[in-house]
Image (tube, rainbow, N blue to C red):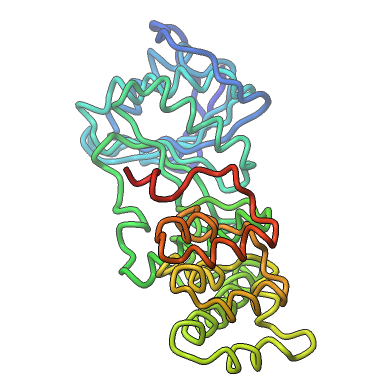
Length: 324
């Protein structure tokens, strides 16, 4: 088994043998490249007596100085002919992390989302609670690093302030609804770095605009006259009508326009909203329909009657009973 070792890029033969760690096989098929960083003495053991047991038959390029002291941190790049044996390397990292707590595996950003998911699953299974797989970077630069539990950097989620956390959460939810595949952590990192992708930026701008519209509708229902609401809704292709047709609700208060009218007994406004195309069974942020909200407040029985005449489903449990 040949390996290229670098102080200058000299070539040396690595020994095979050593014990094979018991561990499950990975479902990662085909060639795989990653970087192993550890103390020089740990890498010497890995690429010496135990090398053949862990990664057979790959090539290995060590990027450390061969004259480095045993307690210096070094790294090597490993090319595995078949990622199916990655579990052995993860098991080795698990076993040495007590004596070498800063040891890590770093995978390139070229991996697919499916491959990254397989690595997360493998680390959880083989790491036995001692290792964590952490995704970092955004877009084409996103990659996984496997480290000892407790050695992870603060997550992007933890570094967000309240406004950023709120923004990240709703961008992720709107992305999920739009079929955009992106993780919560990746969105959080984008928000933290102020580098949203074009599609997520578009979702954010659209969502923010809709929030302004739904807040204005709810405020008009609460504090205004029916004529003021009618004025907002009467224009052809009114953006307020689009909000109603999509069942949008205020993400801060959880209230939707129809629910607001039903809760307060604003009957003319309730009729106007339904005439404009409001979905009679749309849900608010708490997962309740306007009918459920009206039944939570028995004094609003007239609102309940209007909703039932407009076809509201009468088979959902009352919101009041769900609270009990």
